[in-house]
Image 1 (cartoon, rainbow, N blue to C red):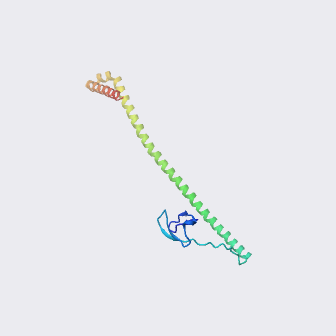
Image 2: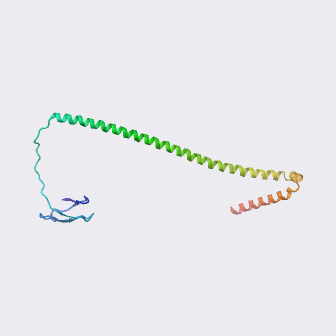
Length: 165
């Protein structure tokens, strides 16, 4: 037989021979609740239908069920439209967030682009100074020491980078 704990509704399969006719205390193995259980005889009599069913009652209840079904369909349509509206809102919010993140990525890429342009311009300036070193020194004799120190510093930076690699 199957016995159900009245506290937690856990079901247990117990042999009939373990429970005497006068009943006994049982303890739930799940929640440790203790209760008195007595085997009750089940009534095996067949139920008889005493009243005849009137067809008018069936028609009225059928019409009421159709009205309930229509109301439920309308409620479902409202829920579906609300869900569709929420989905559209979520999609538009995701698109806005995506454009914001794209704008932030563009700002970062612009910064690195400007940095690269600055480095390339600096290198081009150094190459130009090296190429035109003699004419510049003839016009400005005091720049000879500065240019020499600049080129020596660049050689040191080059050696430093090579050592790092």
